[in-house]
Image (tube, rainbow over all chains, first blue to last red):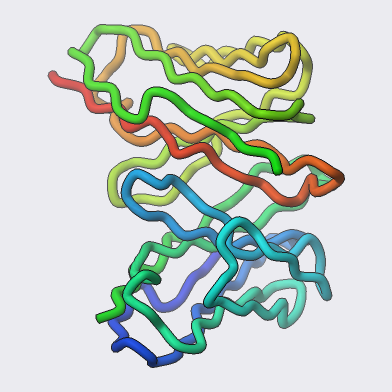
Length: 113
Length: 113
């Protein structure tokens, strides 16, 4: 049981490049989340998907897009990376109906030069 | 929208001293969750509080949920070096957005052995 798997673990981009962060969970969770973590800023919600087929903006959605590909997978795309998007990105999932806790992936450290 | 404020931002203690972090919300919360993140790691769920005035204990950790369900605290008795990390509170959004889980900025605890 892998839990929440994020890829890649590390990535360096040049300004303007695009990339997709992948996230998959094998716990049959309905809800999935993308957070970014910056020093002194805590965890800020980028986008979330309450259930398969739905996505909603979080606190800091600008510059990002998401796709809930199926129940297992929730990807985060940076269309034109900017240095301000240098951060650690965490994916998380939960089944609120089962009153479970939020499970986090191990994170992606992204640097935009 | 709902905001979760957490204080202090940093706390340094001598091993054996007590530690408390506080979480305050601008709106009434249906529940509040606490997470711990070790340095270099990902957040890990500690506990969820649901009832007004609820108090839960996990060994040396005591969690409280305020009577008005707008504030919460985490108290650690006799800290140990294994308690080092950042402690986050998190609450669901208001206005029906229960899926929109937002985090406080966290309290970084360091322990001097």
